[in-house]
Image 1 (tube, rainbow, N blue to C red):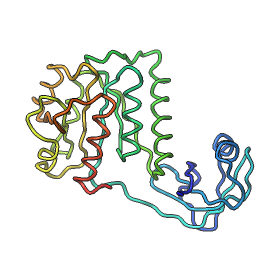
Image 2: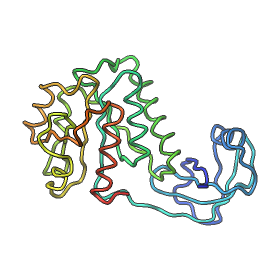
Image 3: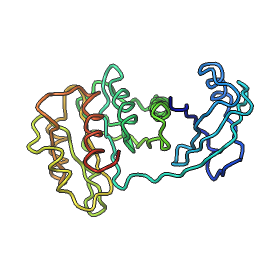
Length: 249
């Protein structure tokens, strides 16, 4: 069984044989919830690419310490994938973000689409985005990822078109049931890709105005199969396909 992973900013710059500690919340989870004990193997990361293997030295629920045995620093994939996920009812937007994180997405951007039933209220924006960040971190921890996906600033309606900038290697593709091209075909035809921005609409779909804005900017409308998928499943499945296509696994 893979050792459990914890996050700590102290991991950055660590070397073997150094000691790192977990904060009270992580320590309590490790000892009380996961029942870890002295000498158990664990993983610890800064969420920015550094991953350390070590053993528990002081298994205290208030302050757990870990003796580092090995440190590796991984590089981000050459081609980044940003899931632009429309706000959706029933927390299906968060479910999509969590599953995409487990699959390996690099960035998640909340999108208040024209047809989103859920709205990002200004007075609750800080709390809402903090919830998204917490979900991304928890999903990355579950997946034993050295990188926690970045949470992008929310976009509204046609603002998604502004992400398309081929001269900078940024391409926007909208998952759409009426897309005239396949995701694989479009992705393979793009040149010098830096980031692929994958747009997933809400329950009511992407509006004609939003789709037109992307197509006018030079983006594409694509499909990933003959079935119409939920807002919570389309994005993660597309990310998995792109991982295979771009050798990101």
